[in-house]
Amino acid sequence: MDMLDKLKKYREEEEKLKWEGTFAEYLELVKKNPMIAQSAHSRIYNMIKSHGITVENGVKKYHFFSREIFGLETTIEKLVEEYFHPAAKRLDVKKRILLLMGPVSGGKSTIVTMLKRGLEEYTRTDEGAVYAIKGCPMYEDPLHLVPHHLRDDFYKEYGIRIQGSLSPLNTLRLEQEYNGRIEDVMVERILFSEDKRIGIGTFSPSDPKSQDIADLTGSIDFSTIAKYGSESDPRAYRFDGELNKANRGLMEFQEMLKSDEKFLWHLLSLTEEGNFKAGRFALISADMLIVAHTNEAEFRSFIANKKNEALHSRMIVMPIPYNLKLSEEEKIYRKMINQSDLKDVHIAPHALRIAAMFSILTRLKPSKKYRIDLVKKMYLYDGQQVDTGEQINVDELRNEHPDEGLSGIDPRYVINRISAALIRKEVKSINALDILRSLKDGLGQHPSITDEDKERYLQFISLARKEYDEIAKKEVQKAFVYSYEESAKTLMDNYLDHVEAYCNNQKLRDPITDEEISPNEKLMRSIEEQIGISENAKKAFREELLIKISTYARKGKPFDYNSHQRLREAIQKKLFADLKDVVKVTTTAKTPDETQLKKLNEVIARLIDEYGYNSISANELLQYVGSLLNR
Image (cartoon, rainbow, N blue to C red; front, side, top):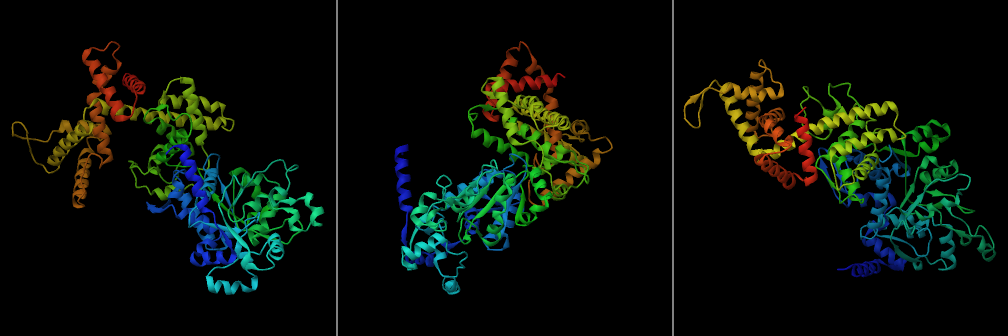
C-alpha cells in the first residue's frame, strides 16, 4: 500500500468515526455503554490501563508509558495509583491540579505529551468515544441537558452521576433553537485533537503585561454586540480560551509557576468546584485534568510565598526525578539518537553505556548506612549482583535519600556532547573514549555547572573510564578465545573438580594416565589469586563454593559459570592473564608477522560478526587495549 492509498484509508476511517443524532438517540448509546459518560479523569486512567499492566519486582509497570519513559517505573506507579486512579473514582484528588516537579529533561514534558497523544488515539476507539452537544464551542457533555431535579432519577435508571450545569450558551440554544425539547438537541461524536483545539488545551506564560485572561476564558466578540444588543448575551462571546477548548479532556500549563497571579487564581474555582468565571455569565462548568510542570527551584519559591497557600493546597505535587538505572539510561540515549539524524552513525558497543554510567554517577548520593561506593551502588540499582562485603537492602538504600535523582547531569547534555564528538571526529563511527572526551570538554561550557560540580564530574568521568578499561579488556579477551564461554566453562569445571577433592580430602584421576593424583594446588591458587584470595582464606572460599553448589543442586538449579560472581571474575581474569602476552604482542606489533596478522584479522572479524563493532571501532578497540597492556 503506497502513501496515497494510506491517506485514502485514513480518510475513510475518519468518516466511519463520525456520529450524529438526537439526545434521545444518544441516551440509547449511553444505556448500552455507560463508559461513554465517563469523566475526563476516568477517561485518562482507562486510556493508560488499556495499554496493559504487568508487575515486575513488586512494581506495577504501565506499558502506556514504557514506550517513551525509562527507569521511572516506581514514579509512574505512584503517579497512576495516587492520582489518576483515585481521581477516576471521583475522589477528592480529582479536585487537584497535578503538578509534575523535577529537573530539566527529566521526562515531565514527555509524560504530558504522551497523555495528550494517548487521548487523541483513545477517543478514536469505542472504549474512549466522546460525545458533545453539536455546535458547542466547549464540546459540552450532553448529560448537562438533564435538569437538576431529574438527576437522582437518572442515576437510579442509568447508574451515572451527572456533575456540572448547562452552559449559558447551550441554555439559550435549548430555548431558542429547540423550544426547550431536550430530547431533540443534536449530539455529535468528537475526536480530541491538540492541533484543532478539541479536548486538549495548552497555556504557556508570556509577558504578564501583554497576556490577557481571555487567553484562558475567551472574550467578548464586539462585532456581534450590535446584533445581539448586550455583552451578557452568550452569543456575543467567543468561548475560545484554553479552558473552553480543553473541556472534557486535558489542560496543560507549561511552566505554570511562572504565570501571573491573575491566571493562577482562576484555577481555584475550577479545581474545587469544577467551574470558572467568564464574561458576564454565571459560572461555567468544566471537566478536565489540569496538569502543570515546573522545576524544583521555582516550586520552592512558590510555596515560600504565603499568598500561594490556597493554590498550593489544591495541588498534588509529583516529583519526577532523573532515571537512576544504568541500562534504562542507555535506552534513553538510544531513543534520542534514533529520533535524530545520528541514527545511521555507527556507535561502538558499550559507548552509550559508558555515557550512561557518567550520568547516573552524577545523580547518586553517597550512602551513610552502608560502606559502598557509588559505582557499586549504580550496579545495585540496575539489578546486578555486586560483591559488597555486607548484606545490603536495596530498598533501604533507595529510601536513604528521598531527593536522589533530582539533581545531576541531564540526558540532553549527553546527547549534545555525543553530537559534538561526531562533528569533531567527522567519521561515521564513535566509541566510548570519544564520548568521554567530549563530555569532559563540555563541562566548562555548561552555564549551570559550578566549579565544585565540575571537579566532581571529572572524577565521575575518570570512574567511567576505569569501568570501560575493564570492559574493553574483557571484550578483546573474549574475541581472542575462539570459544570463550566453552573455555571459561572448562576452566571452571577443572577448578571445581580440584576444589571438591581438596575439601573432601580425596584424590583425582588423571584423564590421560588414569593415575590417582592430588588436587592441583598451583591451579587452584592461580585462579584464586586473581581476586585476592589469600593463603589463609583459600579454605573458607573453597568450602563456600561447595556449599553454594550443594544449595543449587538441592533446588534443582544448575551451577554454571555465572552462578558465583567472584568465581566468574576469577575465571575471567585467569583466562585473560593466560592470554595477556599473546594479546599484547599481537595488538601492539608495528609490523605483525603472518601468524600475528592472521590472528588479528580473525579477532577483528569476530568483533564485527559477534560483538557489533565495525572495522573502524574494532581496530580502535584493539589499539586501545594494546596500549593498556603496555602501561
